[in-house]
Image (cartoon, rainbow, N blue to C red; front, top):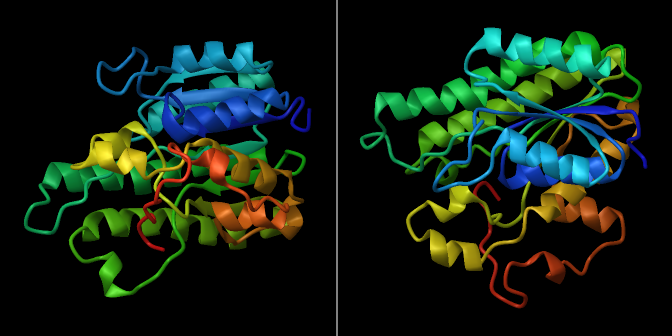
Length: 272
């Protein structure tokens, strides 16, 4: 029960990777604050903050379900205040909530552009800001953003520059926080998958059914996050981690169990 008594604040936790991380930490005794906009099951995507809260409790953790749209800082502050009121503090922040739209400049409507920047950039920034005062008081505090290592090769901007910019901004936030918070012993890192991960976001992309068969399960990201969050915060900050590499450091090199279809060809994720 490595995270017994620790409180993890996870955005976008009603499904997918966020949900799986929540369950992984719950099994290690964590208090999990499940933050997402979905307070009811989505007809196409499934999951809600309340359904995940029940799963967390069933897994042995304590849960607090909070409906929150991280585009609005008043809702963010209310969510953080409620988490602290219930659990007494925040030890871990997982910035997982994200919007994706893989379109080129001409095809990107302003509302799609704004959605990605409001969630991926502004949301990550102000959720982090709201949590920082409590992370400073925590023992071994970690911020972990699910965003890629920054690579300025034009191929990662071609055809989806708005999405790329928004995800790189999440990584730049982590880099900035690593420097700002180092003196307080607060770690800030990023984590990104080597291959695409089987989530509703992938399934709803063009060709999503085929991509799902070439994906790994969200558990690989959750397990990698677990090993990062165990590390001493004062010594582990400012890194851009890849899930495979994190597991390899732990001696885990047979990753076949993570494949949606064992033995299938895997599709490398963007930015790698």
